[in-house]
Image (cartoon, rainbow, N blue to C red; front, side, top):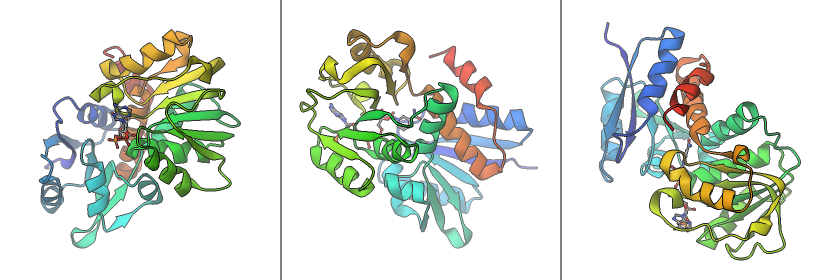
Amino acid sequence: AEAHRYAVFGHPIAHSLSPEIHKAFATQLGIHLSYEAIDAAPGRFEQAVRRFFAEGGLGANVTLPHKNAAFALAAKRTEAATRAGSANTLTPLVNGAIEAHNTDGSGFVRDITERHGFDLRGHDALLLGAGGAAKAVAWALVDAGVQSLTIVNRTPERADELADAIGEPARCYTRYWDGLDGESFNLVVNATSIGVLGGSFDLPTSILKDHSTCYDLSYGVAAAAFKGWALAAGVRPDWFRDGLGMLVEQAADAFERWHGQRPDTDPVYRMLRERF
Ligand code: NDP
């Protein structure tokens, strides 16, 4: 029988780890599927994804730069997708309609709490960035019980919008990028694309407490910039975390949504960790 079809859409997409991760989960659980990487240029994404579902595709992951478009085309949106304003997981409904979901927030929390053993409750968190991934992470941090969440973003209006959306009584604040003097945090999360696009982490080292954790949503070479800042600022190397675990966990959450079974993420994480 023809395998059930899944895919990830992005541009570029050649280096996506999603096919490898989903195939490893499927092998682990004895599920027969195909999982392709489909390159869709901006402006061609909606047509490509609709064709994929019309031809029998059963689920699609979405990565840069299409996550906002994936949210926009959906007839139905989960709360997680609505909060992020973007989608990384699309599922076909009846009559060509598509459901948008976002697993970045849940993947982040699962990675930092379960894999790294970091209890988020009661902590003061600083979030860098206010894009789609930052929005997902901001809501997830608040849901996980951080004591306060401070957001800084290059474009301050986007940080303000995010804080307003989360609202009271979440103890969510925004600051200018250069307005952090006198404040300190247990957790600093980089959800900007500085590591990919370039730019610098121009932050005072006084924002760190004695035992602060720094978490970068990026991984591989893209995590070098924030890691460089964190280590120079005095963060212990084993208290710096990159986004490889989040990548595996957000994939597992999409996988579980489609297949109804939760894979064991640890072997897949360890396999990828050897390369990154
Ligand atoms: P977006 O394009 O939606 O957001 C990018 C963010 O980075 C914005 O806040 C933007 O600020 C900021 N930014 C970009 N360049 C600079 C700069 N030079 N200086 C300061 N700020 C800058 O991207 P996403 O939210 O989708 O992704 C963000 C990062 O998270 C990416 O690197 C992505 O790879 C990573 N990611 C990792 C995942 C994982 O599973 N590990 C999952 C999802 C994302 P502004 O608003 O001013 O433009």
